[in-house]
Image 1: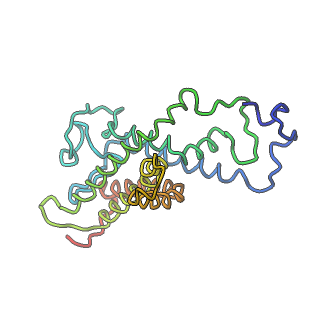
Image 2 (image 1 turned 45 degrees about the vertical axis):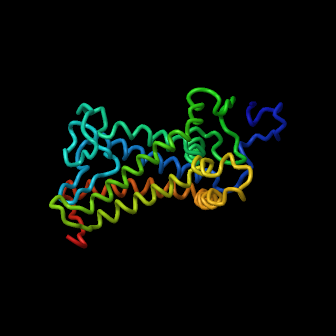
Image 3 (image 1 turned 90 degrees about the horizontal axis):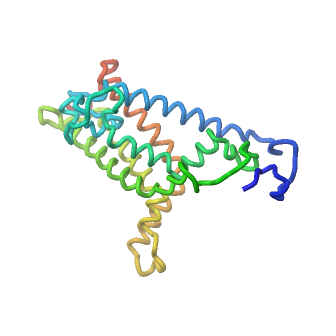
Length: 266
């Protein structure tokens, strides 16, 4: 595909990059700052290998779930320990790459980081600086087509996060407990489920390959529900980034002794 300023492309030839007079640069700039800040925070946290578990209340941050490393606190390893304990391997190394790939290949995130980081294009009606465009037909962007498979794995990992949130209601002594940490863990899991269910791949899986919805009323109802969620996929994408960071930071703060968990029961 030719450049957006190429006369052969049949587009208007103007000296300015765009004739837009609004602050078109603000959304991509905000996305750049937000995504970069989250990636930096998450990267630091997953390699800290500390302050991820609150023994008194069974809180496990989603950044370390499931905790497979031999360096994990035994009580935090709900599914065994078999990864070597070295600094360059995250404690949840078997799941974090798939969660990252699920987010990277997400339709909304593609739009966000294509515009914010690659300026391809930075906004509607704004010429991009790249002379050539090959789309998602070459490596590595051709891997974007595997999004649906990462969706299945992300859904499974979300179930694991839900398990962590549920068992945290049982204190080490076997009694029931409820604190602010429990509420935060549950709220994070609910948002993760909503974000995952609002995924375009989920919508396609629920209602795809059906020629007549009237013959499949249950799938039609499910498809309608997922479609409504899908209209707010962008909001859920950002909400889950916020909830993951808040959940992790709260558990880190309690684990490190910076604050005490607000207890409601037990």
